[in-house]
Amino acid sequence: MSFVDAHDFPAGLVLRVLNIAASTYYDWRARRASPSQRQLDDTVLLEQIVKIRSVSEFATTYGSPRVWLELRRQGVHVGRKRVERIMREHGLQGAYLRRGWKGGSTRQNPAHRPAPDLLERDFTATAPNRVWVADLTRIVTGEGVLWLASVRDAFSNRVVGWATDPRATTALVLTALNHALRSRDLRPGQLIFHSDKGAQYTALRLTQRLVDAGVAPSTGSTGDSYDNALAENLWSTLKIELLYWPGTTFTTRRDAEHALIRYLDGWYNPRRIQARLGGLSPDEYEDDYRRTQRDADR
Image 1 (spheres, rainbow, N blue to C red):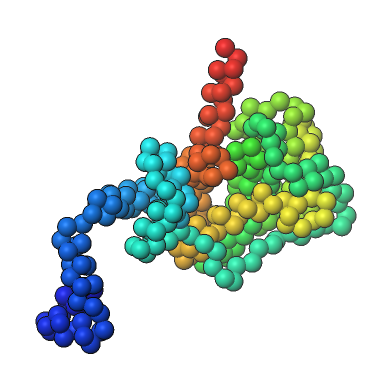
Image 2: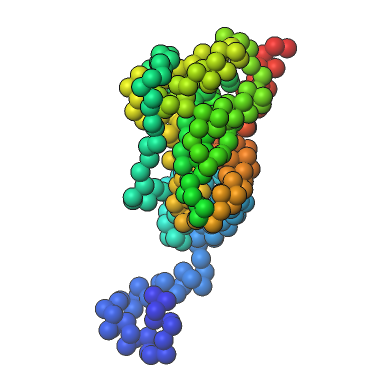
């Protein structure tokens, strides 16, 4: 309808050419001049949606499901379909996986003897530091590949340790593991460390470090991505939101490392809400668990 008002031709002539009923056009103008209460509420809701998607450089990846969860956190009671409609009408879209992405970087060493599969694809945990999953992936930069190794807690999805290096070595995954061990309060005999059968994770040095820390090593039984699905899920999320969706390219490895710090330590752990966590971030989910435990002990 705005096309009619945008030109100097008589409205009646334009409406006849476009085969639009005059009543439809004048009803539209009346609604614009005197919007309904629902339209006014939609305008307010749109402002709230835009604000949610503007709190961080990564918040623009939020689609309607996560925006709806964030609105609920803020005490805004609105239907999920309504949020979806308003975002669609204003071209606000969440991040999604573009075509052409492929994963997979596991290289096994037949001389290594992998640990048994202690999880059998059950990645549930009833408390922090019961199940950790680990994996590594590559990020392409203008200087060459940067390898990223991570350790993720299955209870809260929190990334408890990560490290980068130009090469995919046992030293790299050991560094990520050591970061995780230093950052958590562990009790020997309670934690399972699960990975795929990559040579870095079946190496004796890593296995010995786990045993020394009182951690039980575990590897996927078939060596495919489903046997380490929780770790693979992190790579999918990270690469969609940090790389593919915004079309980010890194000139240097240092640029990539700085972006990873902002994403993992500044966004993913403390602020990125997740439906599986009841609309909380990993840090918030663990804080809530600790509060519940303290209250139960009183």
